Image (cartoon, rainbow, N blue to C red; front, side, top):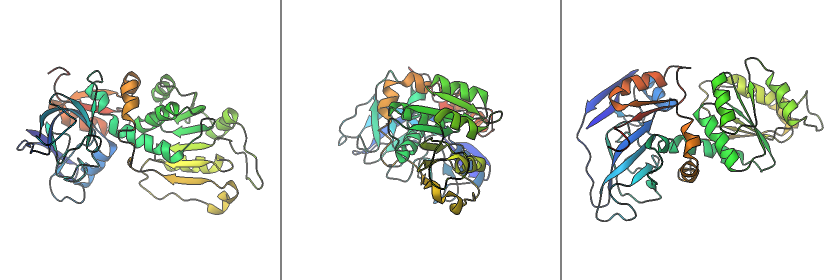
Length: 342
């Protein structure tokens, strides 16, 4: 089979390798779609994925079709469509330092158990949309870390796939008012189409002033400056100015959930924040959310489909990787393997 490996700093190669086989406790999956994540570009830039050394399999956002089921495996049959918990694969994290990657034509799930390593999804959900399950679980965890009440008002910084996934999860949770902030007009239009109550173009608008206008002013003893009553903030952008903006506008006992990866330290004035009692929570991965979000994707797959900007066949996987790594050129790139009915 063909598989994409990171073969050096800034270098990926499509290689021919032996296809995996399924033992009595395993499930063999033909990959039908795999999303490209920003971390794939990071792994490629570094020339590998710890703890592995040398050529490293890439791809950790898969959906596929079961083609072989071991005799001891229950709850799945050949032909089932599945999404995969890449953090639960027993031979290492799939596509993130493990023995296999999902930018391959097949992956084998060792010691496979439904509800742990994989979940069956209905065939009406396109494989490309089902492949969003992993990044949408990341977004759902950021929302769970925020833990907003239905009456709360939330601001999301960044209308990329994770920010839009957080928007959908917040609305699924019944959160009263969600504002999405970005600098790209078509991203903001997409946010409105997916249910945002308002958007802010931070290139042309004063974010703090608009949040106060939309959510009201926060009051409290010792608060410095004009502050918003926005109860929750999600950083899905990873830019230092996002943190500075939140620290400057957050009101009494607001919560900030940081899911974005910051590549440089961000200075925080704890003394200046003391009277706000701001709660900062970091969000990584999806300890419980990988299949929690699946039901929403099944019920609302047409909405989730709008997150995908480009579907590119595996024969052009290098083009897909280059497109996804180019800032501003694409929102969410998904690599597809054959037609939906092949």
